[in-house]
Image 1 (cartoon, rainbow, N blue to C red):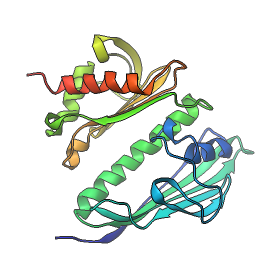
Image 2: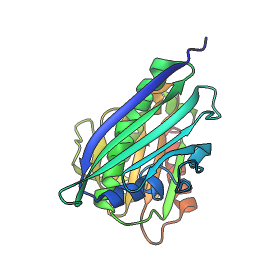
Image 3: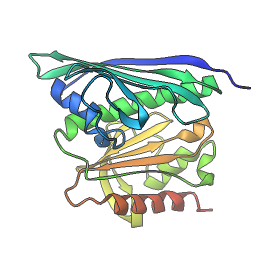
Length: 248
């Protein structure tokens, strides 16, 4: 039975980046923290990503886009609103991010997932702005695990395959086992039971515990190395993720 209800998820934070850098991340460098999208037309009424329309355009301070038909059965309207203000003579920025719209069904589950994803995505944004400032993403890949990655402890299975223990804390430097058994030196930049973030010298590696919301564990890799290749990065980590859930 459908249940169409509006939702709103709002966050505010400060970041050690200029308003111009934040604006670029929201409009033309989305692959560094979210996923690559076409930049919006720089005007009110212009075309935005995913069929949206630009409702506000005031660089580098305000940008809003909205789509009335998302093309999915579970959500109709979707709106993203970004407000950016300078702090410390423009050396830092204050940001307000608001995601709103209408969920058509399974409202509580969808809201919980979107709410928790928001914190992880905005954390990844801050990692991108402060750890890889001004660097364009060279290799980007996002994908899901197999059906076996939908179990209740599926994210923990991936963490164990990496070599993490239950006591591995945020901020810890770790050597994890990646594709092909290759050792990767990384920092655990996010971990809360729903998501895992690893940061290397050249990449942000993200694990999404979407098994908590009836889906499967997924991954995204933002690789800033000059020789990175999206297809190669995606194939390597997809193979790793599939292999994790094929083990007895």
